[in-house]
Image 1 (tube, rainbow, N blue to C red):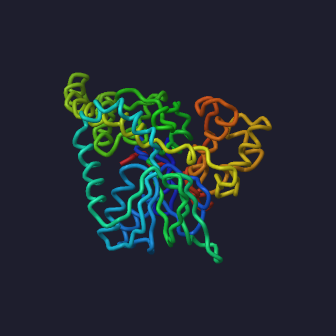
Image 2 (image 1 turned 60 degrees about the vertical axis):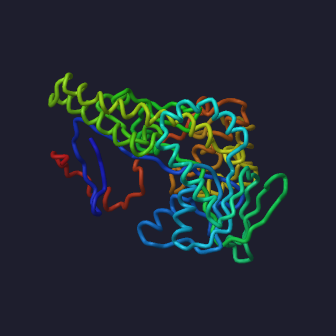
Image 3 (image 1 turned 90 degrees about the horizontal axis):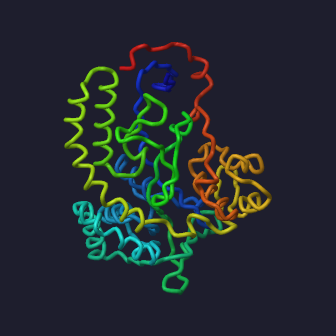
Length: 375
């Protein structure tokens, strides 16, 4: 049974099989001042540019790590935005660790060339680019809006005036829906996030429920498309619409595409792992912006005996705001694990409850009509 909201009306559908394609969300980037007006994610700025042709006000600073940081810098530069600097926070040691996965990266050479092209075009522009940046901090003016970006580069503290700061530390699977259903999840040590456990066809531990694409683990757009095909063919087979032979025949070339497409992931996952200051931020940093809970608060609760995010809710209401833990869940688990000297896998994650998005009471009251035809 699937309950949804469409065109202002709640509905209930009956389905023999369910395929979730929730995709990814940007990894939340907690650091001092990230809650200030004028600070936003690179993904949000890209959506604003593509859908409305709008750009953040200049002067603008971009900070973070990963291919999207480079891409959005080039897109905004092409749109005529004044970019004060691009601050790359990728830790130096990540390059050494990623070197062990160069072989796989070469198998995904097309994606590798695309990233190198981004870097070359950025260096060829007049944009100031600084690497190995740390201690990122956003500071406000007397009106409470972003005014300055403070950071450390080569051991020296620097400050840039900025009206806008775009941040990015990669993407993670959007697991709110799969969590709410009760699907088994596992901690990914390379991507530093949770992902649902699925088989080679995308089926979860709950029979009949499939997950395809980045919602099952970050693999990129090409891999997501191919994974969707595999899940669709397995669903057709389970519904008696396709023989095992036809399913396997169709799946074989898709799996051949997936192998080189996913071969580069270990290299990218290790290279662009966020710096520690973003995984376990300083005490004064707001972690749960909805309920104004700081990293220091969470550490204090962990020292008092809180063993996981759900218990911490009772102490502080962390994760109980409008975002339903989307913006703080990973960080809360990381801080508790770090404080208690254990792992996020042991600490666990929030219990997610329906509805997945805020729902007007009138739509809840209208539930009852069931559409027997999911189409």
